[in-house]
Length: 272
Image 1: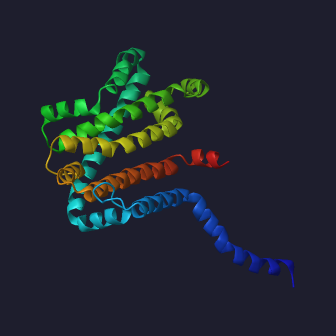
Image 2: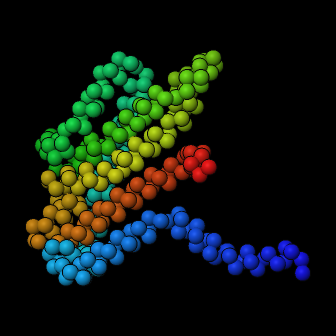
Image 3: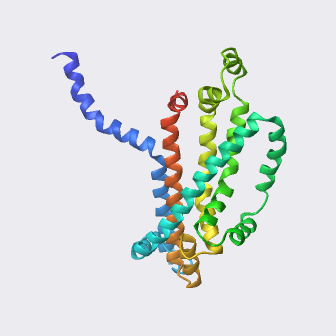
């Protein structure tokens, strides 16, 4: 029997285990999440913790399933506010970063205000936005945009500043226009920084929408959480919290997948 014929059964036998190892390596977070849920379930069962203090994962899951239609309607409102505010923050953050990169005067005037804006507590600025723009959808979008635009604009601006001077000089020799510089140099070179800022913003976006709903409105996860808290339904409150966490994670992973698609060279360099 030839050597390559002996190797085939061995490769076929080891293929499932190799696939399993790769799957576990790429989804380690699932294992850590499973360990956390099992620990949570074990603590509540072992110490017989009352549901009104700490509902178990199974009780929380049953609460989510029981209120799925109502929770879904509230979730739709929050998702609309989150995605609208995140989209507005992306446009505003990129515009501010481009303007600061194009003008030293504008950068000196605006950059301190960007930093100071983040020193204002969200719980203080959100009511002002609601007073100015009402309790509707647009006010919640503005609150989310206020929370999210800072990491996008700062990461983008800092990325523009670190672009290679040699490449800038090269484009100068070709008399490239400002649009061509951003298209062929600044934007591609800064994409990892932009995506890093967008990941940070994605984790804050749902929080901004929920805070806005807490302060006023008629629909949204924040309203659902407020009603669950007022009726002392801790299981529903935890169900809403888990829903918010899942929504934030989905948006974060969406941005991460977008980064893989837009910057494949960065991922290859990371694996190397």
